[in-house]
Image (cartoon, rainbow, N blue to C red; front, side, top):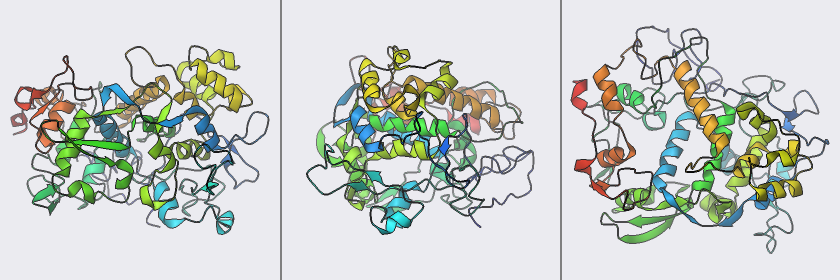
Length: 490
């Protein structure tokens, strides 16, 4: 019952944020803690042939939606093109932002626990949901791979925590607030040394991993990693994060370059390393000076090109390194939106922008002409289009590098966080509230300063660290990058 129940010690309205996120809302003390369900903006949609069956929704005509890998291949080509504007640091920190909200067991489920979904035994395993590989698959048509192992998401029902007749509630291992729990953990004694506000570390080749020489304690660091909003706390809102936001964030896989180009501190290219090789562990990062090279890569290497329909072939055909013969992360993303009951793109656009879309022609100006053409080839009706597919094909606004629907969902999620989090960092009347001077220092925080403060051997960085180095954004000494004055906390 460990994953089914949340132990809540009596709340005290004057105490600070708890590391396990309980007692954030005094009316719903367990809400937002680890192992609480995701919220939804839209009602779930499933094909229910029995009261305890929640299969992916059908098309408007009542047919099965086209296979996920076939859809992915229709809309996204395999390849590698670098962006000319955005650095890999943006993708790394977005992964951290995403991980702060959710840690699920989906990948572990089909990599370690249920590895036989493509065998005869898997046909009798209710958690199995393998991806079909067509005979004319662009990559596998000349080999015998016709199935990619995958499972259904872990829910409270599949974990035995609630009846199987209840609409699936996604089980998430992370707290739902922006509390940097992916660094500090969400249980007592998880990663803290209780010495000088530092994390517990291990030393490899004389270097501490993670490097905590300038870490702040949880009670301070968990507030400082936030975005500025007004004090608009609403105690009637349950702390939590929405499933649609989490699903849409998967589009960021299109920004990932699977080959990491490593550089020394002078910007000289050293070597390359496949990111998928790190799936089973990061021991390689700890070898020799590799951590220095990886950090330099984050500020020097562009991410994969954002405004195109190309995804890295390692993500679509390797995915999990040596753990499986082949894995398609982008197709998994698509299938998971169906298995989680995410409604169609038409309904998502209606929610976010009020669009009334009843034909493919109505998508003009919203998605690319090429995307519309492919939709007509792949789907029977515009109402069948998957939400993630619609986002893949959206037209970007000028000088904006985020898909419009994802941008709106991020905005909504951050606003919801500011309203539902009793400890949101700008609230003047919360326990351990910051002073005006402390808030002023927090607002000085930048990605560039972060790299200077905690990046091994980083002595210079471009001021706009998410943007590539250029004449307008040159490498600058860390001495000239504005810093936070921590003396205001003493």
